[in-house]
Amino acid sequence: MVEFVQQLINGISLGCIYALIALGYTMVYGIVRLINFAHGDIYMVGAYIGYLTAHRIGPHFFPALIIAMAGAATLGVTIEKIAYKPLRYAPRIAALTTAIGVSIFLENAVRKFISPNFLPFPEMIKRVPFEVRGVTFSNVQIIVPLVALLLVIVLQYIVLRTKPGRAMRAVSLDKDCARLMGVNVDKIVSITFAMGSSLAAAAGVLVGIAYPRIDPYMGVMAGLKAFVSAVLGGIGIIPGAALGGLFMGLAEVMAVHFINSAFKDAVAFVILIIVLLVKPSGLLGKYVSEKV
Image 1 (cartoon, rainbow, N blue to C red):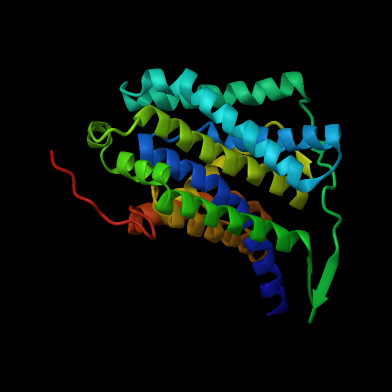
Image 2: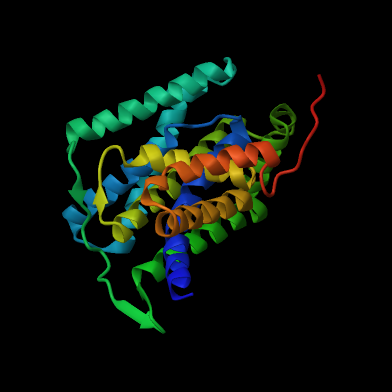
């Protein structure tokens, strides 16, 4: 039981990081029906912005978090304007191929202009260990879920209670009808990319303080697992992405500890196959028939 609780704590911390990345996937898909495979690399860039900020102004967590989120939001909007907007009405395979190209470009840009090697992430929060009845954890494992929860609450408030949030929901339901109602669809798409990218950057900084090592390819597998998390929860559904991320983190940690570390990455895709076979719409998704 002690081992199970220990891994439960570890899994929640990792799952919150996957959840933040998955939220960006699900938001973009809900608005423009695009699987943005460059999203994992925006998460990577966010981690590097946090790294560079800490080296420039000192290892302070909240300034690094805010600057990383702002920088990634700007990057996300720039990518949307340059790479995705011209292909908005093109076949989906064109946008998908472009997303993969953007992903490769970001990875190699970081390799070229920063470093191709692993870098130690600065210690922004001094680790303080705790032990309760044999279960050990640190203050970082408390801070990561709290920050993630706060960001999810803020996101839910924006989507459900603000004017841009109502416009986002309108565009996700019917883009053409929303445009007829006076919604600036291009502006809403940009806001969506900015919000999703900022959440990915937050995940990048959090993973830096939780697992203090970053590299240019850290977003590849994390992005794929976050995509699986979004599908698992019901892609296009914000609470579903958060739930899927938590489930994915718990499943990965439990598989590593109780089965074999070789299944660390495989477990995500096993879950994906099972979900697609049993409930293709995801845990919180609903089957919707389409007219043909």
